[in-house]
Length: 345
Image (cartoon, rainbow, N blue to C red; front, side, top):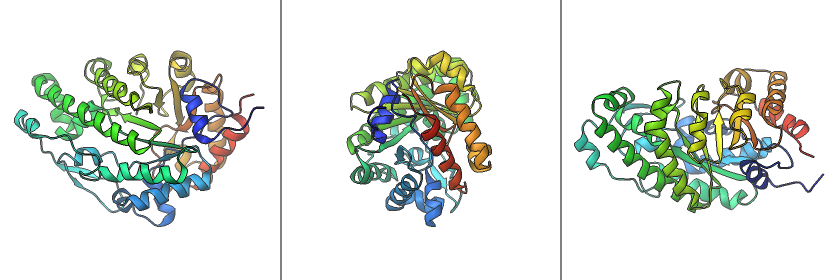
């Protein structure tokens, strides 16, 4: 048995399709990490100190390999003028879009990640986490795929309609979002992030056809990843739903890592694309992590390791973000099984 790796070394090895000393664990907990400290979801998403404290608390309690500087998925659309209704203990809802015509897109300006909206929380959070755990624990941050962000800014139904009847308008917004996310990721990398991800679930087969992903999402995701890699960071692409039909296209974006959710056959993903990109997944964040017993978690964790752990290039995680109220013992069980059953000789 070789020398034990640091969390960051372990993650870098997995993302590079190598065998680390053991399978890395990514709990995928954002605002839920603040709940044990008494923070509401809204407080966590508006206060960098509370976000950082929540992440450091969770990492210490569970001994996982990642910390996240990330709030809610609407933070990026909000920074360009989407008005949100943000309840105290629930995720925000869009109320009004600033884009109702092509002329409105022309008025949009790429936000400054260090100044505009709540974006500075993410960038400053990276810097603060780096001062605590930098070089040891993997610092994960990121943004949204241009297709998904454009749909958030315009409104999902109007955006999808635009792709049929006003394609120039839709693509103009996608190109704006591409420039925006490239700049966001650069700021995150320069602040000290180790991994910068794109979430592009609105472009996935659960919502639109695979052709939509190939034509209107994949090329723009690739542009962003190409830019981010120049900053020296690892990259990850998250896709909710059954993404099987676009796995090859997800690999074509050039991402180091593909995050698949619980609806996906993890063994099939490993066989089809696991030799070309690292895979992260895919315990059910609700039925297993949130509502399951520790025995459920242990069993499902072993199944994930058996499905995708062989040969390296695998990160154990839930299939998507874990919501507040989960038993900490379930994350501890996931971590315990990874340490016991996820070691490489």
